[in-house]
Image 1 (cartoon, rainbow, N blue to C red):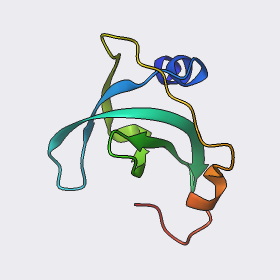
Image 2 (image 1 turned 180 degrees about the vertical axis):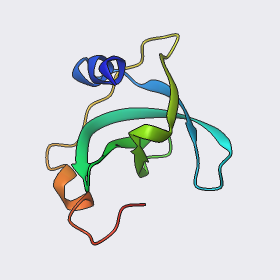
Image 3 (image 1 turned 60 degrees about the vertical axis):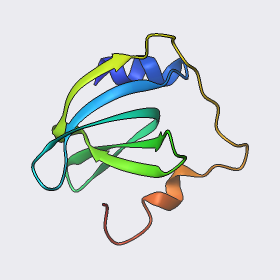
Length: 91
């Protein structure tokens, strides 16, 4: 999680390997936005390459790496991460 936090603080896009809801290994390039804890589980809120907001259970993340080009990102001024965690369920 420290590596994700460092990439997040520097606004770097990262390559993420994780176990999806079907139990399969998946890969995504994401812009890490923030971590949230809910019911003793930690989640990573991120933007995908196709501008979708995704929430990843940290326990399902198996590998993190920088992109080769150290691509950076910026969030829109009015982006509110809290609204994604206000709903009754995550995922």
